[in-house]
Length: 235
Image 1: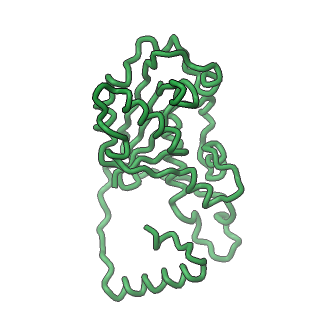
Image 2 (image 1 turned 90 degrees about the vertical axis):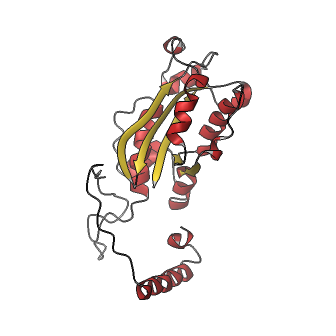
Image 3 (image 1 turned 90 degrees about the horizontal axis):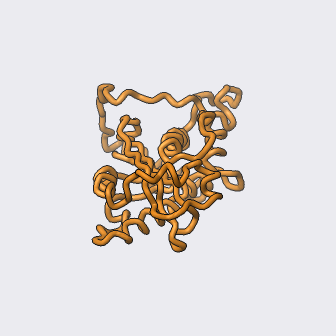
């Protein structure tokens, strides 16, 4: 399974008001392992950046003067994300801007959803932690992901941080303690251990028919007890 964790920085908040993408950052996951492959590009937007946006990401108009335009990098970008699942925190924002950029091209190649699928981690976090803050910074604190080096927003840095948060958020329990007294109880999450990309694949032993049937029965029982909220059945 190939996934691309993506983030963007922009000149402002609304593409409908002429705001543009000025940075794209992507990191690659294959079978939940960071591969080290990434796509990162600053872009010349051909317009001024709002002061409020500069305060968020620190990217200046002067810095972007010699950077390529979206049309110059779109082929490389689409080739990188093609066929993958995009993982984005608050996907409508980034997808809206990227689809706006694609639509401005002389020969628009189509919407980004035509090249890949999208997983939004914001509603996922809201479902897991209702009534709590679910910003990327809040999730870093909740899942014990180090973001101390994040003084300003940056697309590649935020994509790297979101990759760690996503792996922690979807990694299950952090402790095998069943007595409620272990260190892994509560909201603490074990430190993420990244597996080397060159690590040999584990031998896959498929379940037999009896085991599959028992598994389905167990999922049905969990689904009934949780009022239809068995996540595994929806996968």
